Image (cartoon, rainbow, N blue to C red; front, side):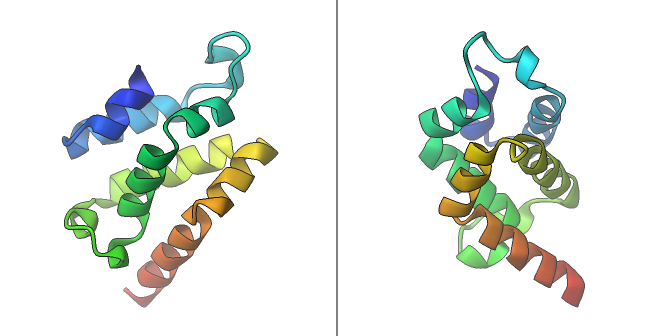
Length: 111
């Protein structure tokens, strides 16, 4: 339910808090028999779009430039947490999340 709320929310401050909660979940906090990759597959398009919008302001989405640094930081922490799982890392790479992170780092470096 929390992940569904994150991808559907339009309230940036709420998204920051929700992703912060996701950051604190361990694999043991997930429902029995469930891994992060299951959620990435279930909400694949929504999660990919959300992370792309947060991390890469150059992709042309109207809200992309408005995301504040706290949200970017929480998203990066969450990505790092779930990428401990090789399957999640592959999902991130296949969905251009790694590329979006690279673009964000380049942009921050130029600032």
